[in-house]
Image (cartoon, rainbow, N blue to C red; front, side):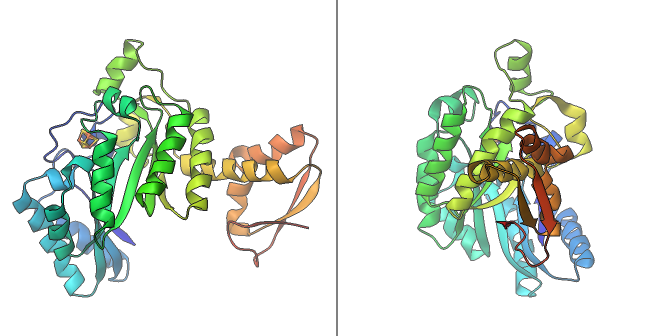
Length: 321
Ligand code: SF4
């Protein structure tokens, strides 16, 4: 179990085109140490007093005042020393990482460092107003992989001047840079952002849910094959997000839709005629797809999938007779 603590927009002087941290996290300011402690205690209470990690998400953690960072980290370290939490995870910007910073983070028990890389294409980064380049991602990734920390690289799809080819290039670079974890966030246009203005002015065409599912399924397969753990696909659901949504690839079940599309892509390669298919019951909704779209997809091609539930099969496995 992860105990997430949101540190929204704290210390971030940037204004990425898509970003409205307050909307994503549902909070206006960073939590005080007392509030952070309350979050940890509440989670531990509900999880039988043990958790894998305390995670500082939502902004540019290493961009905030160092004293404040250390206060958060000391708080988390307290729980590591008590033996109720194993380590710390955090997310930050690629241009807020250097060797000294990583050394300091490690001394507090940080194990996983996730960088919001978003894309490895410099035009996409520039047009998204990211304020860093792909070279910054490369440099930060090297510093992290040379340390004992685990590197995570987060990416987005559907950014300005982005396309499927650039997304797949970004995924390949993540692998080459030594990422062990990733998150895939299809772009959502939120009120009050630069992207919303670009959209209203006709300068930006948002990605549809179908576009996002299609490219994310390809990314999903690539990361799976390279043994890069996919921690999340799509923004977390929430009232604030729904309230501020203007356009783009938002769906509360996006992650499940992507896995279902991956199932379809795999079956498309293998199945040419009606057949029995054995699936773990826990995997059946992903196998069938949203409103049984995978079953219908094959039916339209004259192929009937006779699905047989079998507990003995691994959750993500698909076996044929
Ligand atoms: S760097 Fe992160 S927190 Fe800052 S504006 Fe960009 S996305 Fe938002």
